[in-house]
Image 1 (tube, rainbow, N blue to C red):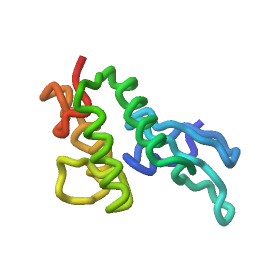
Image 2 (image 1 turned 180 degrees about the vertical axis):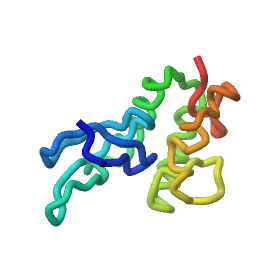
Image 3 (image 1 turned 135 degrees about the vertical axis):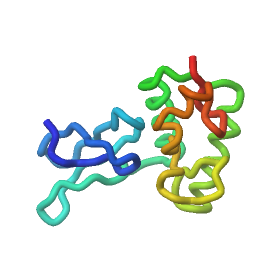
Amino acid sequence: MTHGLHCRLCGENLESTTVPNIDTTCMNCGTKNHVTYHQSELVVEAVPGDPELELRERIEEFARLRNYRFNEFKEPVILALLEKRDKNGDFYCPCKARSVPENVCPCKETRDGDVEQNGKCGCRLFWKQ
């Protein structure tokens, strides 16, 4: 049942219940979102935990949802994403110069079909089967 909650990364509607303190995965970008109450309203936040685990789960889920694959470039890209998080506060795509919300992995271009069109995303993390 949808309650007007949106993914904190891509903004897509999330399926959830009115029960607080649940985690739900966005079916568009693979991001885990934590739904909780704040000042009597349901809000969406990051799932607390290890940033590397969060990133790995996100990209694995996104690849699964889109039927994408990884190759030998996966680990170097993950390391670059973790460095960007340490430096800029989020998993900004290493092939993008600007640290803006649409460049958080998986970036908007990738979510919008860049892999389908080009066979891979710009940083070569996600590849078409």
